[in-house]
Image 1 (cartoon, rainbow, N blue to C red):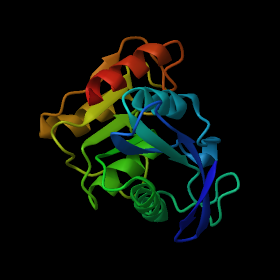
Image 2: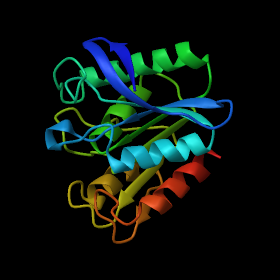
Image 3: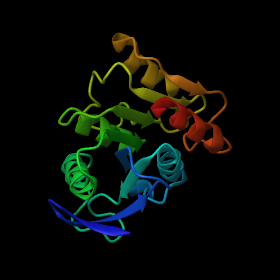
Image 4: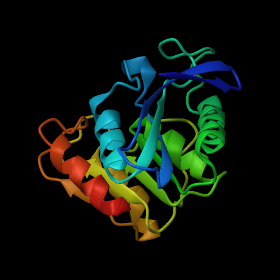
Length: 198
């Protein structure tokens, strides 16, 4: 656990390190804390371990107001600034290595907005929160963004994600029968992420 200085105070951050010399850094954003989302979420940790297996140091912050992190939940606005602060710390720790931004549900919303403000090698959105907040998820993301969604997602309907992706001609990887939390699909989800980053 590392405590990283953010714009609203300290951010408690779990770090999953690779076994060898890092080839990149990743920041992975958790689901909505108003529904209990934290950096220990299984989807977040699956993503972190998959990226670490490919040489990325994965930073998993509790964003503002979550767990021991300072500040108050800001419905995805100030959380983008938190992510940029964690990226800055990751680069201070490891140098200007390639960056992966990733997020699950609300975290996907935050990661997509962070990507509008900073370049990254990869953007990974798992069950992205499309159509859930007053501020929409960005209308366009990089063409090589990995979007993963469950066919039976009970929180964010697959149709909403396809409607968002269609104007961009953006592929969506659908896990047949999977719900929002990818129960029973975490191992193949990790493999998919690992393959995506090479």
